[in-house]
Each structure stands twice: as structure tokens, then as C-alpha cells.
Image (cartoon, helix red, strand yellow):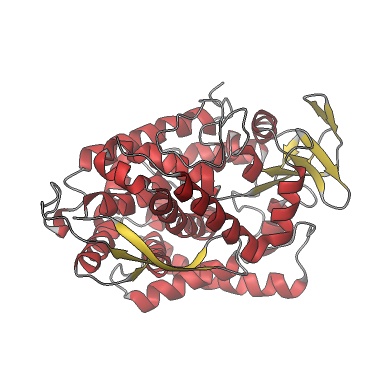
Length: 448
């Protein structure tokens, strides 16, 4: 049986702390300090800090009591840049009607299109470069992959080239520049800068929308076919092109580092059926959205704590996903860990604002893990650096290299062009599981 070492686990914990400390040191110190102060902690000038998974989930599912559009919420700042109908800043009947229309946007069939048109070539290229003995920076790789995804969503030329992909990713990154814990409103200069980046992306979207090509598989065309107006299309793509692409590009290098540092890449290679579990555990550990902001619309009493109307709530997903009551030995990365159904997938939210691109994120992450599973040897980390001035903590550089190749040929060592076809059934199962869970969590009922 393949086991991880305590040294490997300690190394993983250390690097993850450095990822946060590099750019979010004050926030890291704050969330670590309040972890054991109770389920809800009031901090003047900041808001209510929530450390308990059940309470956090209850808040996310109560869109009447806690909103994304009130003073100091993330939605209110998004409105400054994007406008009123950005999906991420909508509530009530209008939001419910919009999400109902988007229910099948990321169907299993569409994910297969994405795999073929967007993910297959970069995955094959990654595999080929590693087998050839090259060093590969997974951070740069994910920037290019995310940029290619943006091209696909906007209806641009898929084979636009690495320079275009990196530029589009950079635009999205600039749009999602970080804000401070005490920030409740963006200043005029910040709004103007972010709006300029958003408008540049939307100029491409408008061309695709007005072209109205029924043969296109782009998100813009799919939204057009659903009968959305261009203003509504802007609102949906604002979420997908910013938070969605940034989340995945930040998560993958950290997930790979965790697998390598703890030695569990060997376990995943031996048991590729653990891929879905490995993605779950990586997202729990990484926590793509470490803090989720809400505004208290109506005074609520949860778990004996009164949360007063007009104040902010910071749901500390970083702490929720490390709660020892729900995740024993929470700082231990374990791809065989079974997550309780009440808190599984909570890293992507709950209720009506559950992540729209949930299925797509799992497919993207899975495409990279599949490459690592099917290489003729394990990869190792050659060097790494830690990003600064980013919304989502991540690496600025994670260079990997293929280790010594064993004499026996790996069972899946085949034509890189066939990558994805060899394990197509597992990918479809993963998408189906995610789709089913999205229906459970996304409708506000959760899994409880």
C-alpha cells in the first residue's frame, strides 16, 4: 500500500502557508487567530467572522437574510464595475429566474465539447513536453489554458496562440485584483481601471453575440440561443471569465504541489479511480474562495449568535474547510478522505449562488490530473515561487519535471493525441456526479 510520510505532509503544510503569507499575511494571521474563538466572532471594522461549516452553509442558503448586494458585500463592489445584472450581484426572483435558464449551460455533452476543442491539445502538449524531459511551469501552463478557455467562451479563434492566451488571462486577472478585508467600496480610479479591462473582454463578446453563428459552441452563442439579451450575457460572462478562470488557474498548481509534496501522486497513479476524490480533497485544502462576503439584510440568530442587520459577514471558508469536527486531522492532505455530504463542495458555496461553473472546473482540473496519472513516471517539483497582489492565493511559479522512467512501460503510455479518450468513461462519471451535486446544492436545499 502506498503511504505518505509525515515529512511530506509537513512540507505541504509549510508551502501552503507560504502561498497565503506571500500576499495575504494580515488575512492569514487574522483567520488563524480567530479559528478557536468560536463559531462566530465579531471584529469591529471588519464584521462577523464565521468559522463553523454548518453556520456558514446556513448563511449561504439564506438569501433573504444575507445578501451579496448589501453594503460592504462583494456584490456591491461588482456592481460598481459590471452593472446591476452581473449574476454574482443578483438576488431574489430575478436571480432565481436567471439561474433556472442557465441550468443546463454546462451539461455533460457541452463538457465533452470543451474537452475536445479546448483541453485536449494543451493536455497532450503538457504530456509531450514532460516526456521529452523539459521543465514545465504549471503556472504559465494554466494561464495559457485559461486564456484558451476565455477564447472559446467569447467565440474567438481557438488556436489564437500562447501570446493571446496569456494576454486574455492577464486581463481577467487585472479585473479581479484583490481588495482589503476592510474595503467596502472601490474608489473611482479602481473602478475605472477594472471597467476598462471588463469592457475590452465585452467588446469581443459583443462581436460574437451580434454575429449569431448557430454553428458556434461558444458560451456567448449558447447564451444567445437561450434568448438572453446582451446585457444579460455580460452579467453571466462576468462571472465565468473572471472568478471562474482565475479560480481554476490558481488551484491546479497548488493541487499538483500537494500531490507531489505528500507523495500521494503515486497513490493516484496506482488508483486513478480516486481522481474525483483527489479533486475534492485538493479543493478542500486549497479553498479557491478563502473568504465569502455577505451583508446582513435581516437580523438573524444562528447557533445562539445574533447577526445584526446592516453589518458584514465574512464566511471564512479557509477555516470551514479545516474544521476538525468535520475534517479530522484537517491539515493532512488525504485523497482517500470521505467528505460528509453536509459540507461536501462547500468550497464552491451553497444555495442559489452555488458556483455556476462547478462542472467545468472539475473537468479542467481533471484534464491535468489525467496527464499526471498516465505519464511513464511521476513528476517532481523543481522550483516554486509565491504570487503577490492576487485575489486567490497561488504560486507565481511551479516548475515540474518528469522523474526517472521505470524500465517497465506504463500501461497508459500511449499516443498523447488519444489522451482523454482512454479514460473518457471516468471523465463522464465525474461530470455526472458534479452535475447531480450542483442540483442538490445549487437549489438552496443542500444535502442535509
